[in-house]
Each structure stands twice: as C-alpha cells, then as structure tokens.
Image 1 (cartoon, rainbow over the protein chains, first blue to last red):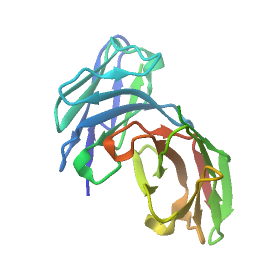
Image 2 (cartoon, each protein chain N blue to C red; image 1 turned 180 degrees about the horizontal axis):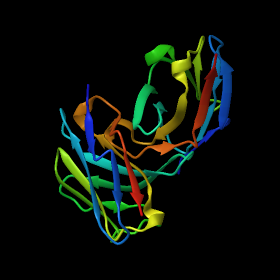
Image 3 (cartoon, rainbow over the protein chains, first blue to last red; image 1 turned 90 degrees about the horizontal axis):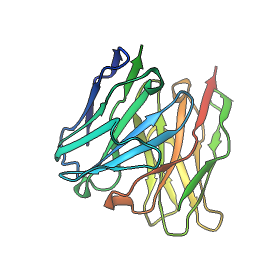
Image 4 (cartoon, each protein chain N blue to C red; image 1 turned 60 degrees about the vertical axis):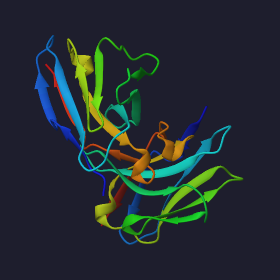
Length: 116
Length: 115
C-alpha cells in the first residue's frame, strides 16, 4: 500500500535554531501534502496544505514565516520550523493525498520536536 | 463548513467486550467519512472509510462502522476488543474526498482495554 516516510521521528534542538522535517511518498505521487500539529491528548490541528509546485496555503493563526513548507516535487515535502522556541515543541504529522491513490490519505509516522 | 464531534473522550472497556465509539458530524455539503487509529508516538492508520454505497463499512482489525445520514452519525463498533486495541481513535470528514480535500478531525476517543 501507499507509504509516507517521515523523518526524523524525534528531534531535540536548542531555542533559536531551525529544524527541518521531511516527508516522502515512497510509492505514489503526492499531489497534495497536509501538515498537522498535535498537542498531547489532543486532536490534529491542520497547519497548512501544499500542492506540488505551488505555495502552501496556511490555516488561520499559523505563521507562514515561522513554519516554512516546501513541496518542490511530487514525492517530497518539507516543513522547517524557524527560530524554534519551547512553545513550538509538539508532535508534527504529514499526510499525503493523490488522485491516483484510490481515495484517502496516507499519514507519516510523525516527528516529536522538543525545543530546549 | 464542517465539524466533527466525538461524543466520548475516553472509553474504558474490558477485554472481549463489545465497544462503540460515537461520531457525529455537521456539514452543509456531502462528505466522505473516515476512522483512524493512532498508537502512542505514531502517525494515523486508516481503519475504514465511507465514500458511497453500502452504509455498513467493514475495516481492518475487526472494526466496522455504519453511516447514518439522517442522524449524521458514523459510529465505530467492534464486537470483541483486545488489549492491543488500546489506542486513540479519530473520526474525520472530508468535503472533497478523493480529490484531496482537507480532513476535519474530531477530538479523539481514547479506548482503554483492560484485562
């Protein structure tokens, strides 16, 4: 079945540094990629939607200059958290969708970001 | 706009007992419906989905769900749970479905299966 590989699974960074999270669709072309943030014991909050080759569409309240999303190819999307602060610590999950996928969404395994 | 309400935040149940996780949605347009399971520190795994056709949908791991349009519900059921079913369960809707529209999630239900 469709697989989305998300890396790293865990990352600890110092406050003020930037962190890049990658999501790769391994056996299909991800025309659309969604990035979510999840706080402990809470649901997934959609941060942004990106289509290959286009600028990402951010949800209300999400800082586009802080959370940089790149979707330069049909198999790779990245989320860069710039100038990270402790309040950015969270679980980040990507999800890929494709017209040729037969319906539905494939999720990455998530990245646990801890900013110290 | 769409919204999803999962009526129970936590459901404790004994092993081999039946379970129902409730989900109601609100939408002004037709939607596709999904149930996902999330194990600790992992991504989401699709249990089942309703796109069209029969309102009773069977998924993986012995789960099934029934779409009720008049009650705008999509409750998830399993006749006999196992310890390994302990996880967080999310109901979700999409107004565009396969076309790649964004998913709207419920708040999640924590299923805890006790021996």
